[in-house]
Image 1 (cartoon, rainbow, N blue to C red):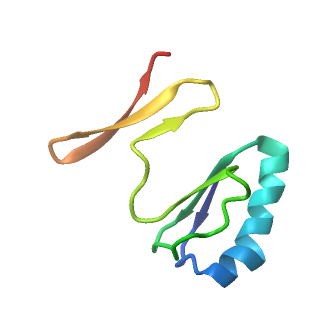
Image 2: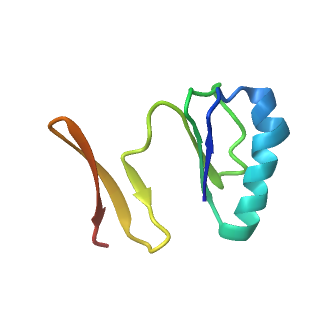
Length: 86
């Protein structure tokens, strides 16, 4: 589950609208990520650890639903995502 928001993640908007949307997705699909394209306030509610909140810096490793790990590798002038074997 990935929720993308083209806004700054302030605490009020996160609590009043985004978190409730994320929780409904968590019940259907399991843990996921909220991505704020324009950054976010510190210490936003993470739904008891079920969501990862990202802003400017995406994590370098993500666990895919298949159980494999996706790893972001920086190469000259490009960013490539590859899957690791478990």
